Length: 266
Image 1 (spheres, rainbow, N blue to C red):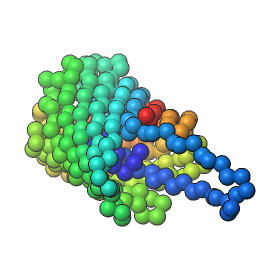
Image 2 (image 1 turned 135 degrees about the vertical axis):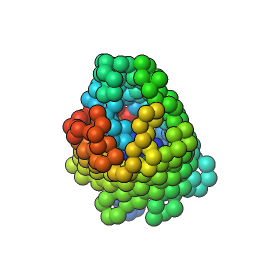
Image 3 (image 1 turned 135 degrees about the horizontal axis):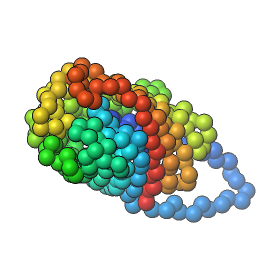
Image 4 (image 1 turned 90 degrees about the horizontal axis):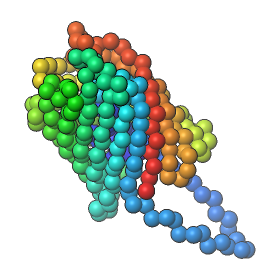
């Protein structure tokens, strides 16, 4: 994932980038130079499918066995500026939600954003629409969210902050996150990370709830495996620790969960 993917991550945390540095050694004055074939043109499309044992959105556990798919498109605009369009759809496979119980729940998200590479940091601004479906659609309202994000690197550590305002619920959500990559070889890496959220009159789109104060601390460790130049398989395990904003709710228990995703670039 690139830095501009930090905007509006599907799981509600900041999807901090792992910068890729590729070094090549070139022999001086080779006797038999070889002309390398032109690289395949990248369309900027990424298709992903995933499974999560629990669906965690900004510290709230919505239910178990989440199946999702996503499609994103990166569009270079001018030097150092890119636009991103994305669509995400997910569903609880066994209708095991944590709000009413045994009710179906699906979510569609559509987003658009612009990211500027300022050198020391990448700055993003975007809009996201949340549409809730299934038996729980009457309990939730659609979200209309704008967000501002800043991501950078401090040595080997990637850090980022995001501020989001949802016009539909008149609430703010703020998040900070960090991760780093431990590269084992050219195919396999280990990526530990952590994030923390803060709510100001934020409801997670629940019509009957509003939370203030710190929402959760999340920790995770992912194991991306590069299957090819375009395909990456990423298993992960994570833990979620709800904080003050979620006290005395039915989603205030600590949670250990995991999953796997497959992403293919075109």
